[in-house]
Length: 380
Ligand SMILES: NC(=O)C1=CN([C@@H]2O[C@H](COP(=O)(O)OP(=O)(O)OC[C@H]3O[C@@H](n4cnc5c(N)ncnc54)[C@H](O)[C@@H]3O)[C@@H](O)[C@H]2O)C=CC1
Ligand SMILES: O=C(O)C(=O)[C@H](O)COP(=O)(O)O
Image 1 (cartoon, rainbow, N blue to C red):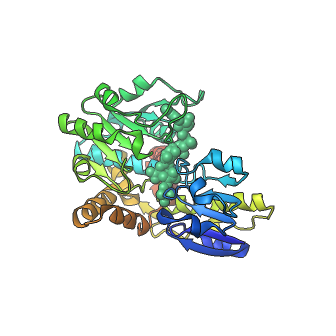
Image 2 (cartoon, rainbow, N blue to C red; image 1 turned 90 degrees about the horizontal axis):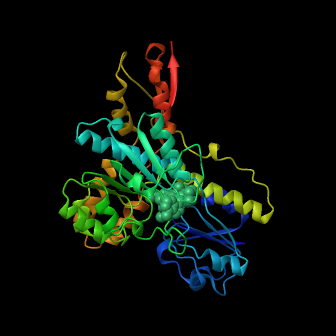
Image 3 (cartoon, rainbow, N blue to C red; image 1 turned 180 degrees about the vertical axis):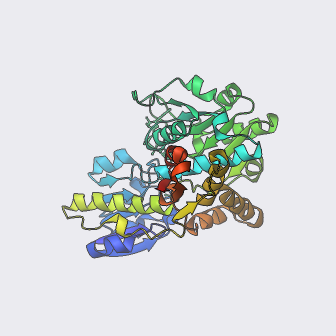
């Protein structure tokens, strides 16, 4: 059996080598010729999987180690009887960590506490629902909109209410042919209906926001803030737009090591099932021990003071923002620089890999640390 896999997918050899020959290729430039004699194709979001790539090939199963599936022609695969799996939820906590780090960073700039903000979440699936729960437990007022869900546990509200929040965070798939398409969901008209000093966070897909309209809005409305992890022209990034946003990153919101490993592992499990083989591997045995496993604070520390520092120790979004700005400034080929940042992304761990050690007397705040995604160890 031949398995063709994106060169940027971790764990492939450890998991798939015993199933067959593994060939690694750059995902963005994969051609029909590259995959014609493959049995299994393993991709990430940068490979367009469609008739043009697979027609006439031997491929019987496609796995994408991502949450999003907008790069895959699912109808065509189904019509051909080609098996398919994505990795729902694999990097959801990683994206939530990203959003929390962004909020902490912007609050620090304005001398605010995260609980001073109301947050509107658009799309309450794997990422959005986790974001809602984690922020609410932190004491943040959160509103969520999702026309496809009836979830009393959230609860949900209207689009208009959500876009009226101080922060609007997008967690929808990129869609065009549904009752509620998300292509250019945030356009000039919606931007005008948002608060003048709102913060827009897009870690979903670039075209969910009309980037030209956003650029104009940021020029005209200087109090408005934007955090972009995804770009309409990706891997190209428009220099002018990057200069206008408060935080800009290279589509790495989901790039914790935990999230990436889980993505490949979920695909592996689905392929074992497809092939009728037992899955004898365990992800927990493959994830390396994090460099930093535990942090402690001085006796009597105030939660509101230590929490932002803890978030930045766990994951500081400013590092990724600086890396993108530096790459865009120095490089003659922005697309290449964008992809290189993603390929050589430094190891980042989910907040859940870090334990906060505290004395029993200070443990009243342990639910908040846990809500934020950290583990807590209470000692006497
Ligand atoms: N920047 C990054 O690294 C990452 C980006 N993503 C993107 O985030 C998206 C969301 O991820 P998940 O939450 O895991 O997906 P999901 O499929 O679990 O949830 C998406 C939710 O959006 C809702 N939805 C669809 N159209 C909507 C609309 N017009 N308005 C409001 N809600 C709508 C759906 O009903 C669903 O509940 C993915 O499709 C992917 O494109 C996901 C992971 C990492
Ligand atoms: O899971 C998704 O959906 C994502 O957006 C991925 O995190 C993107 O990563 P790549 O597949 O482009 O490496």
